[in-house]
Length: 122
Image (cartoon, rainbow, N blue to C red; front, top):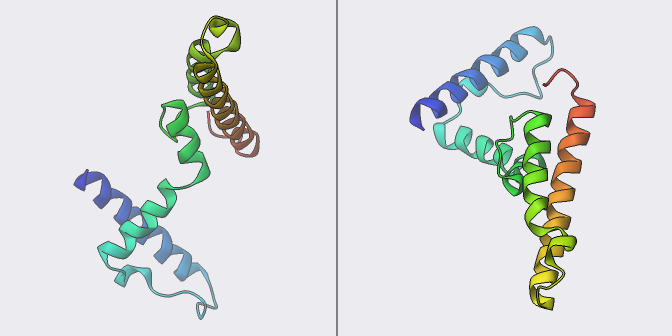
């Protein structure tokens, strides 16, 4: 985990410093190379709290997974909670399954829309 954090930190610093060097007016940007590890970790945590990361967690995949992986995870998930499979279950189980089905559908829809807006990701 520490190696991954170091790689992300170095990448962010390089990207932000490149952005600073390409801009003529840097008055609205601070020099990110001086940011502490805690501040960078907070930025990474904010990225992990993104809607895409939350959708991936519902589907049980990584946020960087392909749309095909998301589709396969969605199909596996709905196979267990589809109303047709729970016709003999009690009302509480059916209600919980309906909520899970809604969460899976919403997560997959978010992933699908993300890939529509980012067609270069496979």
